[in-house]
Amino acid sequence: MESQTETALQIFGLLAQALFSICDRDNDGSLEQSEFAKFHEAFGCTPANSQLAFKHLDADGDGTLTVEELLNAWHEYYTSNDPQARGNWLYGDPSDKTVAVGKSTPSGNSKFKIQNSKLKTPRINPGA
Image (tube, rainbow, N blue to C red; front, top):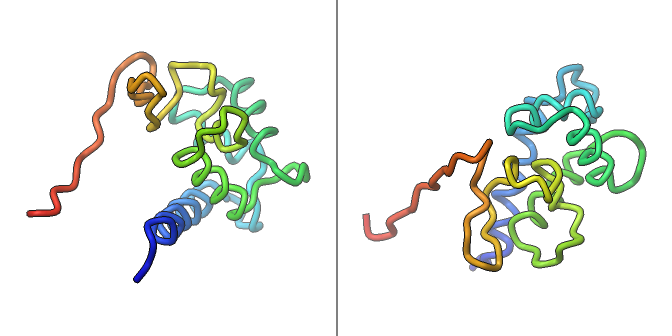
């Protein structure tokens, strides 16, 4: 039987691979900052915010992102309680509340906000 962590990692892996495939416009197997910026643009990130976030997400400092770096960022973003976690930069500057997405804050307020509009996530009804 799979643990919840293993299942979550499989889902994060699929998301990371899908995002990677969409963003890797030159199909070279890595994402440059300009390619990843298109993802950030969808969440209202400014170019400066996206550049700063990219530097934080680029774990090995080689100037590109790999699927593994995206997978780690996704996992950290949604599961880590560490305010210094690299994954907190997945959707841009974590201190910019207009672009933070999909994570509850310690006060219980949802960080599902894009340009100050609240989004709701669908709930899965296991009995359906």
